[in-house]
Length: 147
Image (cartoon, rainbow, N blue to C red):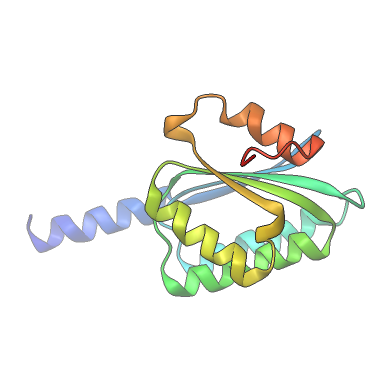
């Protein structure tokens, strides 16, 4: 692959990177995809601050990271601050769906560092088609998928 093709591929990943914040009866559904740099992750934190202003006193968070590429270190640091924000604003439990072992390990580490691992569960959604049902049962009803 020539250098210009590599550059176009990088630009493609940057253009396709995204996050989405949605409200659900269980709390929030956060969707991340593509390659997210620190600046875009900062925008997610800013949008989260706005969304959390109207959040109930306690809520769950389901995080769909099935299409997320591994994060660079600076994005990871911003993600940690965002996780802490959700916890501070009333998050009781969270559930993360990923599609590969590397991403699962990376976010398990982030959760331990940010102090939410006790309330967070992970699943490789590519091996479990019922992951959404399991996620809601965890965040809404405290049914632990790890037991």
